[in-house]
Image 1 (cartoon, rainbow, N blue to C red):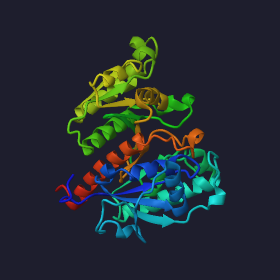
Image 2: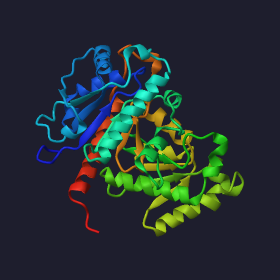
Image 3: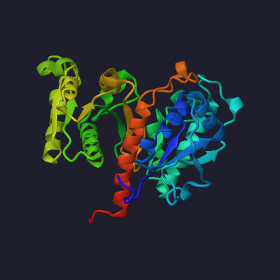
Image 4: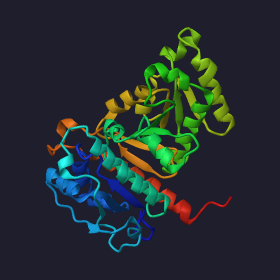
Length: 347
C-alpha cells in the first residue's frame, strides 16, 4: 500500500478498561510499521490511554481530533489520530475485575465507531479484548458482541466469527451456545452459509481462490453411519449444493485430522461445527498470534482472539502480536471496502 493510494481509516479501541487492552494498544500504536498501513484513529478515554502507555512504559504521540469526521482528511496519517471520550472514570475501574461500568464503556465506544463507519468516516475497526460478562452486566442482551454488532448494523443475512492464524481461517455453524444445543444448528443451509461467507471473505482479504474444507460432526466422520449420520444426511449434501453454486468446498474430513491438513499448508479455511472444534486447534497452533474477524457484517471488525488476560493486567507483560495481526487484517479489508465504495463494480 502506497501513499498515492488513499489509506483506509481504521479505528482502534482500548477494550475492557480492567484488562490488558490499554497496554496492548500503547504497544501497537508505538509501531511505525503498523501506522503506515492505515490512517489510524484511537477512540477512548484519555486517562485510560495514559494508563496504558504507563503500563507499557511507552510514550506515543497522537494528533487530537474533535470528531471522527476529521480523520480522513488530516495531513499526517503516520501519526495516529486520537478522539478522546469520557465513558468511564478511574474510580470505576479496578484492574482484573469484571465490572458493569467497564462493559458499558466498551459498548459506548464500539457503538460510536460502528455509527461512524456507517456514516463513511471509518473503513474498519480493531478492538482490544473485551469481557462478555462485564458487557452483559452493563445490559448486553445478546450471547456475544458479534450478535450485538449485527443488530446494531441491521444485518439480516448469515454472520459468524472467523478465527485466523497465519493465513488459516476458521468459521463455525454454531458459536457461543451450550454443547447440548449444537445439533439444533446443524443443517444444510447454515453449512452452506458459513462456507460461502468464509470463501467470499477470504477473497476480499486478497485470496482469489481459497481452499475451503468442512469438518465432520461425529467421531471418525460418522464412520459410515455407525457413529452418526450427520455427515451422510446433512454435511455431504450441503457440500454438493455448494459445488453446484460454484463454491468449491472439500470434505467432510474427520475433525481430529482436518487441522493436520491445514498445518501442512493444504487448506486456507475450515468450517467447523461448533466452537471448541476449531478453537482448541487454532489456540494450540498459536495462541498469541490468532485473530477473530467478525464475519458477515457490512464493515470489517477484528480483534485479537485471546481475552482480557486479567491475570497479567497492569503488569506490563502483554504480547501485542495478535493485536498487530488483527490490525493488519482490518487494514486489508478496510482498504478493499474503501476501494469498492470509491470504484464500485458495475452491476
